[in-house]
Image 1 (cartoon, rainbow over the protein chains, first blue to last red):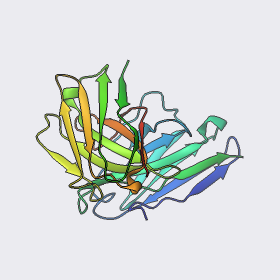
Image 2 (spheres, rainbow over the protein chains, first blue to last red):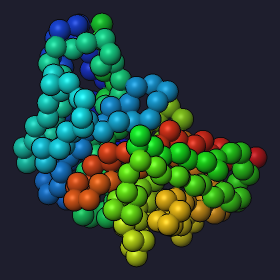
Image 3 (cartoon, rainbow over the protein chains, first blue to last red):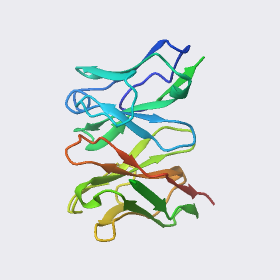
Length: 110
Length: 120
């Protein structure tokens, strides 16, 4: 059971908008930056962006993030086949004194 | 080119030990907090440990506390993870991760990972 909760899967056809939610609590998302990672199967994860306005160079503009209170989300506008991957949210947790990850969301392009 | 290269993984029996290394190049390692993150086969990412830029402060996930030790040698541009008293549930790909200054734990740089397999 992950501290941050993500839906296990999401899907869409090319060009559609897909949103991935990440739910936490006051000790993590409520106080700290939420970071998003993309992992294509068989490769290492890659940092996408966070809600401190940090964004990895080369990340397409169709990726965006938002947050409110103890929840955050990642949106992909105009889904493309190369976006098929697992996506993870993460944040520091004051209560656990640890970085906590969501369980990951597998995005499938139909 | 920014790069981190892990080594030291392998097959080990329960109760055994391994030392993982991570050689950094293309960026100023001494400015970065560094972490180890692991991923059990077919599962998600799990944070293991972190060390601050000069090595004076460390922290660990409860599941590895007392068994794993993180360290660094900035002069050699290398991060280490000593794994002792290994358990079957420690089986995973271990990634070394670079956390830039004042980034809010944004894991910006990832190694390719090294596999640790704990089995009898």
